[in-house]
Picture (cartoon, rainbow, N blue to C red):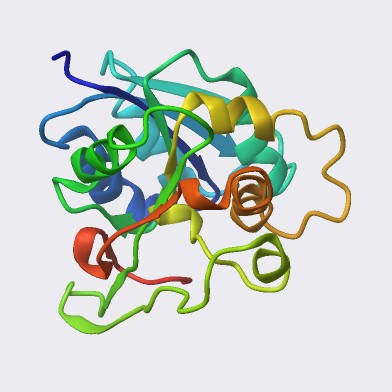
Length: 212
């Protein structure tokens, strides 16, 4: 069995303080192959550029220096430009991933090899020294379109998905009125194939903070 390839999509903006540990945690994933596609959404701080420049010779990292178009459009541009892969994953700039995050996602989605698949987890919240201070909870209601449109059931920093869902989501012709990429993205599998929204335990990914 081949080792699955993940294309990880990271949009950053003035996140230089947090970027290096996050990028390293992505590149250090176990039992998967990783290609990391980073789009800088017009950062104005020198630190972000300096951190990203440190990865310019890393063959697994591709960096796009873009204009400021906002988080939703930035992630969708990454989604459109990404190369073919076995799976894809959204990535925030200020988290740290457990080393088996993507392997667990691949295992979960591999149990359902057809149809659009979205895999999401909970998060561990920590202080700046990475001391755990709490954890998120997963949505307790069945994942249906009627629930997904009023509640974000799949946080982007925990989300992984297959090529079928990518193709489905790219049918979006306009992002006007789309508040967040992950919320909108989760509505697609909830609408097209509710049974294919895969959940797992909250402890599979670590987050330094949900927002900073």
